[in-house]
Length: 109
Image 1 (cartoon, rainbow, N blue to C red):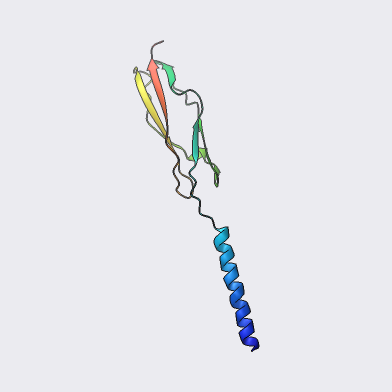
Image 2 (cartoon, rainbow, N blue to C red):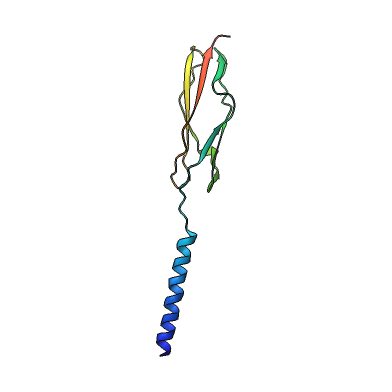
């Protein structure tokens, strides 16, 4: 009789401990956010350097993930025109931020 009582106690403890773990393990489904610093659109005088004003990326779980931002696109400061830069990042759980875009206009002032 003691064995049955002991086994029931162990079973109950195991059952409650596994239930607690499931509650504690919440899946990260919130995407990070990207904030562009500086003007958008930006205007650059033809022949002068384009200086990226920066960006910040934050995630509710991972914190500051700005170092992981991927910037695509190029700006040819020697050719007048409109250029677009795209900013993307994902958090550790694979959630993708909403892509941000910056327009850069190269012109003669």
